[in-house]
Length: 294
Ligand SMILES: NC(=O)c1ccc[n+]([C@@H]2O[C@H](COP(=O)([O-])OP(=O)(O)OC[C@H]3O[C@@H](n4cnc5c(N)ncnc54)[C@H](OP(=O)(O)O)[C@@H]3O)[C@@H](O)[C@H]2O)c1
Image (cartoon, rainbow, N blue to C red; front, top):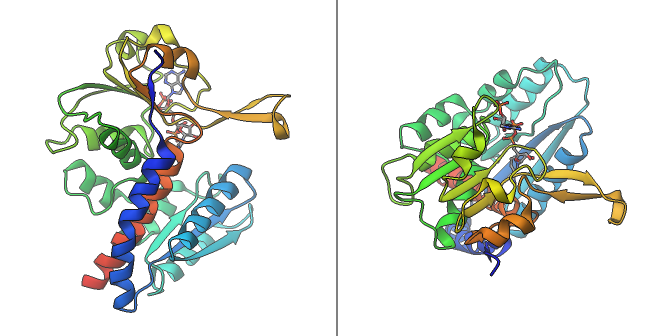
């Protein structure tokens, strides 16, 4: 029997539905949570993500703005835009969409966002708060992974979790969330990467495997054990002449073959992607609540 599907769209809808009463309480105080996105250049993936975030904000009754800057924009101009949004009281959440062109230092852009408005949870202060187990915001994609696990009945507590990938956006903050001595965490976490000697030896041990490598269908059936729970974070475009537009989106997991051995698995698309957006909306509402208390 193929593994059960972990439906990210359905779970994201649950998370979003739980936000409505919080948004109504803010509205009663005259506050509309507002999310501003800065996008630099014409990267089609970035444009699509920012558009989806804007659409999701609108659907939830949140305000949103997109600041579009040219590929050649200077770092000073970008930082100026961030400063403007930092001081705008209508803006509760700010995200600077990555990737950024080489003239802009990612560290500078990330650190320029007011930590109280840093709904991506990339600012060093917020990263540190996650690590010590006192998060202001939960990093969106990693928190989406945790919600997928919990709400599909796969509590990571006490389990061997292997995360493939150690980026600052996914792998590292996910490891930080899952290793906490806390409800919904408390896992034994291994992080594998390009410096790992025998990657399959680790992935085959995993009771829960999270793939976040950006490498299409990298995780094969012989790299997992029977009964594994798999969360696939990867979003990769591969050429496919039979698909509309000539390409198709796949994850980092060889889906059909791995599903045949898995207890449960999240698909791509329709897995982590919708959760990332739901968690970003959650953070924007939280930012509006916290700024209201300040
Ligand atoms: N669904 C969502 O909402 C969402 C959000 C964010 C990202 N993503 C997707 O998730 C994937 C990962 O994103 P990212 O930003 O974390 O990527 P990234 O910054 O490129 O990091 C990839 C990580 O995977 C490791 N890796 C790559 N190929 C490997 C290999 N062959 N063997 C061992 N390790 C390997 C790299 O190791 P080294 O560190 O050693 O180089 C690195 O740590 C991408 O497909 C991205 O599009 C999805």
